Image (cartoon, each protein chain N blue to C red):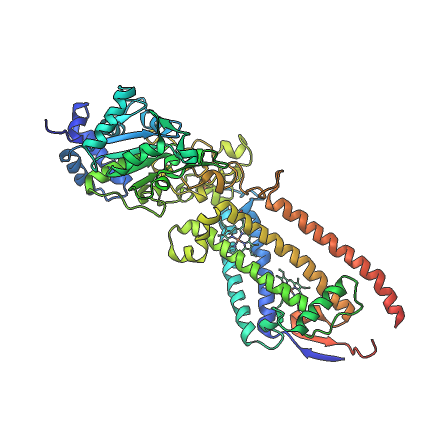
Length: 357
Length: 217
Ligand code: HEM
Ligand code: HEM
Ligand code: SF4
C-alpha cells in the first residue's frame, strides 16, 4: 500500500481544501516566511509521505501532551500532530504493555534514521538513571536508542529542552534536557511550559517542506519561534513605557490591564512568540490573562531568573527576605553613622591638638 | 604657604561629569529596578524616559571614564596611574600612614600634594567597580539586542554564565557600594580640608591646593 501524504490523511478526516490552504498560510506566518511560501508548503504536504513519529514521555507531567490534545474542537494543526504521532505515544496510544513497547521497537528498527522522535520530559542521570524507567529500561537507555536512531529529535517543553522544573535546584535526580544527555543527537529544543503546539506543528511542517530543520539559536531553539523578546511584542508594553504598573493583585492597575513588571514579569528576559501566536487557537497567553511571564522557555528559568513574583533576587545565602536594595540602604546608613562617629571623635581630640600650638 | 596647581582640567571635568552621571544613573536605575512612581497617564512615557536617560548618562559616564583612564598615561604627575596603584615603598608608607591617621593612631596626615596613597588606591578599586557596572549594564542592554555581536561581546556573554537575576543583583550591589564610597569620600574631603586648611574641596573645582608651612609641627 502506498503511504499516505499528510494532505490525504487530513482529507480523510474531513478537512476541506480551503481550510487546508488557510492552515498552510498560517504555518508560513508562524515560520516567519512570506505568504508566497504557503503554496510551497501546500505542495509538500500534498505530495510528501507523512513522517513517522514516536513520542516519548520521560520525567514529565504530560503537560505538553495535554496542550496538544486540549482543544475541544481539534484544529488542523492538532490533527496534523495527531495524524503523524500515531506510531507510539504512551498516554494516548491504544496498545499497552509489551505490545506498546513492540510498536516502538518496530519504528526504531524498520525506519531507522527516517523517523522523528518527540521527547517530552527531562532525563534523570543520577544513580544510573533509575529515577525514571519505562518497561524496566531507564529513560536514558530509551532516549539513546530512540533519539540516537532518529532523523531528528524535537525536545518539546522546558523539561526535555533544558531540564525544566525537574532540574530545578536542588535537582535531586540530576535531571537534564535531551541535548545535554545525548550531545551527539540532532535536537531541536521547543521549550515552553507547556510547549505551544503551533510551534511543534510549524517545525514539522518546515521539515516536510524544506527537508531541513529550521534555523536554530545557540540554545537549539528555532529562531522563528524564539528569536523575539516577549517584552518587545507584549500588548501591555505601552503601559510599561508609560510607567503604569500593577502593584498588587486585583488593584486598579491590574483591572485596567497595566504592565506586570513590578509583580515580577520576566517578559524582558524571555524570548518566545507567545504574544503573537498565543495558546489554545490564539485565545490567550499568561500576560494577557493577567499573570506575569516567568520566562518558562529560558534555560534554567527556575534558578537563574529570580523569584517569580518580584523583580530583584534575594541576597544569595540569606535565610531571610533581603534584596540588594534593602541591604544597600542599611549599609549606606551604617556608613553615614560611621562618618558621623568619626567626626565626633575627631572634633573632641583635635581640640587638644590646637591647644598644644 | 604655597599654592600649587594639582588637578588639570580633564581630571576636574571627568570628576564632575562622573558625579552628575552617577547621580542620574542611580535615580533612573532605581526607578527601572523598582518603579517608585506611576506615570500620570498612558502618554507619560515615564519608564521610557527613565530608560532613555539611563542609557544617555551611561554613555556619558563611559566616555568620561575613557578620558580619565587615558589621562593616567598623559596627565601630570598627580594624575598618573602610579598615584592609584601603590608600587613604590613611599606610596605604601603614605597609604598606611594615612590609614593610621584616620584611625586616630597617628597625629598627622603624611604630606600628599596629590592623592594620598589610601585615596589613590581606593579610586583604583572604584574604577574597577565602574568597569563592572558598565559590563553588567551592557549585559542587561544586550537583552533588547539578542544575538547582537557587539552587545554580546561587551557584556551579553555573562547572561548565560551568571543568569539574568545575578547580573541585575550585581548591578544593584555596585550602585550601593558606590553610594557608600561617596559618603566616606565627601566626608574625608571636608575633614582633610578642615584639618589641613589646604582648600582641598575648592581644588576639585579650580585645580589649586594650598600647602601650609609644616616646619613647626
Ligand atoms: C553608576 C552607574 C550605574 C548605576 C548606579 C546603575 C543603576 C542601575 C539600576 C539600579 C538598574 C535597575 C536594575 C534592575 O533591577 O533591572 C539599572 C538598570 C540598567 N542599567 Fe544601570 N546603572 C549604572 C550604570 C550603567 C551603565 C554604564 C550601563 C550601560 C552600559 C547601564 C545599563 C543598564 C541597563 C541596560 C539596565 C536595564 C534597563 C532595563 O531593564 O530596561 N547602567 N541600572
Ligand atoms: C558620585 C560622587 C563622586 C565620585 C564617584 C567621586 C570620585 C572621585 C575620584 C575618582 C577622585 C579622583 C580624581 C582623579 O584623580 O581623577 C575624586 C577626587 C576628589 N573628589 Fe570626588 N567623587 C564624588 C563626589 C565628590 C563630591 C560631592 C566632592 C565634594 C566635596 C568631591 C571632592 C573631591 C575632591 C576634593 C577630590 C580630590 C582630592 C583627593 O585626591 O582625594 N567628590 N573623587
Ligand atoms: S507585562 Fe511583562 S512583557 Fe508585558 S510589557 Fe510588562 S514587563 Fe514587558
